[in-house]
Image (cartoon, rainbow, N blue to C red; front, top):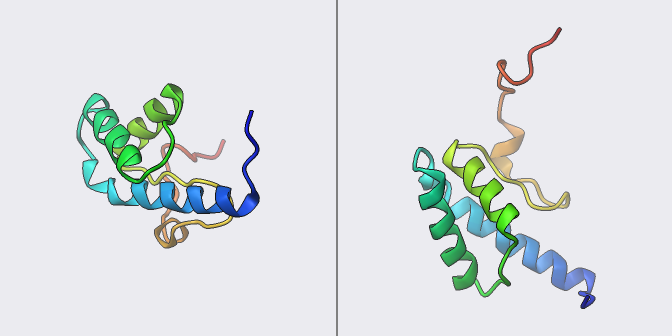
Length: 92
């Protein structure tokens, strides 16, 4: 396994976060369609291929209109303003 310095990893995470933010328009499209667009956008950004499970999971989140956050250092501003979904965060 190749080691990546922290600065390079941070740069890759920020780039990947930007790619995901740019693809929010895919909300409501089938995950299979989102997967193909996501793979192309990752490649176009010069990032390494991501695992199939990561692509599948992120595609499902984007398709459902949920924000995907990469890494704990930077959370997109819109995440701070989202209200919890009562169906997913029901007490009891």
